[in-house]
Length: 604
Image 1 (cartoon, rainbow, N blue to C red):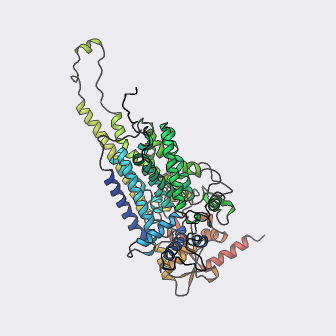
Image 2: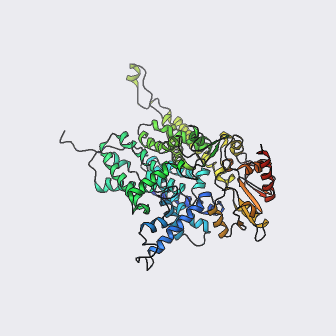
Image 3: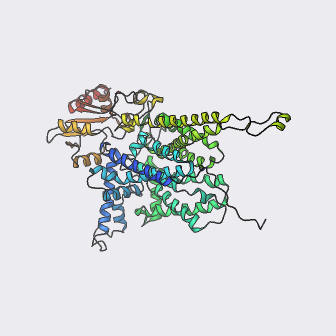
């Protein structure tokens, strides 16, 4: 036994035969196409609630960097040295402040705006960094899918990612959910399964450095949002599945790199790391104790918040109604490949990344608001599994119908049997190959049909619901929110307000984002100045989000006479879209009429 040569254990990953050498080019093509699609559609994609706040924070990072590299940066000033606690907390209002969001998404926004071409509009320049990171993530994920399961799986995975309307919308925004999803995909793409599978002693070049690279991307995921701290959990199943003690050693290297990356990406921790981490966890684990963070939602006709948790099935319900049906079907088919012997571990890892957020979001105490936004990475991995279903489905069909040489039935036949004499299989094999080709064409046709809802709902992609619930009209009737992120305030609404307001008139937005409105007014997009109260306004604007309505908004939505109505999408003739309003503009006289009516109704 000692003289036998050592053989490495083959990874439990299926690679196509012959081995394709085009994954890198497939990944590059998918990344470039994704980047162009997002960049070209950004100017028509409305500014959303969290973007204004994220941009203001990114401006603080840019101001801190300018101060750092200025000639006087090393001198002591009344506001402190750039690396003093006071200056770090001012320049990086993250991690230990407000709601405790980590800082990397702000850094991505700030860096992207600094390198973005000046020909872009102001909002797209701030979106440039998140768009670029998401495009790189799609390319990396497509390359890995192509490397392990063939070119069809790579192309299909990228297509399923960008043809989910809600995911496509969030990929634009200068906020945290897009970068979180992108870095989570990159950490999966960088995970070195083969290094974690080999039984040999770890080496620096082939094992430890890839583990550190993966850990750095995992740390970047954790540095975008507290949700990213769930990303390490799915990777723990790999050494359990492989039953390889060596994997635990490499996991330690990766997790150590993740923690170092998190520390480096969050400057507020540089001065008082222990106290800072305690504050970070307190802010993120006790949202109900922080003012303004118990945000309600309207789900199937009922109100829910942190004190009244969503039903346990809410994540599965959202998955069933917020994904185009072809992608949902191929997702189920991709999950089914977990039964294939050589694919079960790799598919299980993908399924774990999808399932971890589906489970955690369903737990009591999880923030309930904003549709699928708070577990958005799950839909990215759903897209990868759908790509696997498209790529492997025809191959599985061909294998199930593969020809087998008939076996003789009795000893006399055995004696007289000539191999191949009784085979009439070439025509049959050709028919079955044609069936697999037809299945592949049908799958790609169904997948590409998802372009239709992407076009019809533009630019209100966050209002997308599929046919299982009757599209947006059916979802609204069943008590789901038509919108939640102020993406209804698009060019149509802004143009109408500009033409209807004379200089000096103001507009009041119910539950609007002050940072968003101030930035759009400063950029010249919002002509009239945002009013600080209805008493100063000429117009009163509400969005179709019942969970954010006060009594006056509810009365206006039911009984008021609007001067302008914005309907979702650009193809109201499409049954998925219908004529469902997302924004209504009322004359201020209607506001006062609603105020009087609600006062009378509430009079005992």
